Image (cartoon, rainbow, N blue to C red; front, side, top):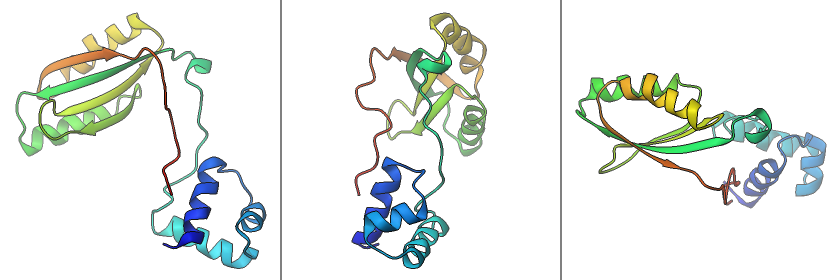
Length: 150
């Protein structure tokens, strides 16, 4: 990866809807080499995809919680079962396995506190292998969906 590839990544993180012509112009390449570089970044998995960033409040998801999960047991089957179950919960917008205690961090969005409480009681608390859930409520998003440094 060279400086041109990094510039492509920086520009597309700012605006994923740039046409290949606009991208090539901003980078200072002709269309064909720019297109080849872009396709290679996509093929290699460096660019994993394109999506719209939706404002959670605009779609009624005004409540966020960070949930720290401590597992009762950490054998492979339990962890894989837990991770598969978490991946099927649409309200979990981010899930990370951590070193140490707690074992996982989940970022969850819901409409309000009541919806979160129901999700925790009916869905999260019955996930396989859980010993303890510890929730922290998000007061304010300070940095959100920041592009990666290039």
